[in-house]
Amino acid sequence: IAYLAKDVGGLRVVDVTDPATPVLRGAATSIGTARDVEVVGRIAYLACGVGGLVTVDVSDPAAPSRIGSISAWSAFGLE
Image 1 (cartoon, rainbow, N blue to C red):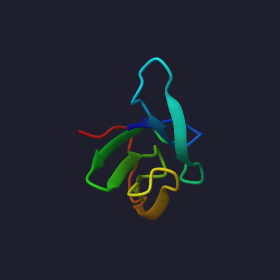
Image 2 (image 1 turned 90 degrees about the vertical axis):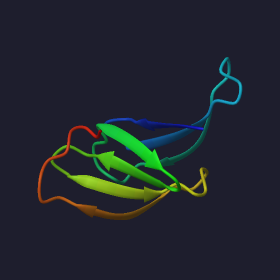
Image 3 (image 1 turned 135 degrees about the vertical axis):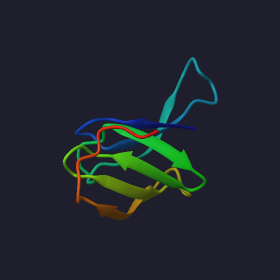
């Protein structure tokens, strides 16, 4: 599985089992402007620019769901 930060498209979850034919498995589109993503376990952490940091549960790749966020500062990248 690959997790893609897709700017205004939010988060995309892509099955890359066969690299020649990646398949979209799920998306979270109402999270803001996703600039970067880091996945740890079942949680995706998204840097969403002025929207701050958003957390998304990706335990079900077909239905990622927003858990929470903090917008006290801008977030444009994760390390």
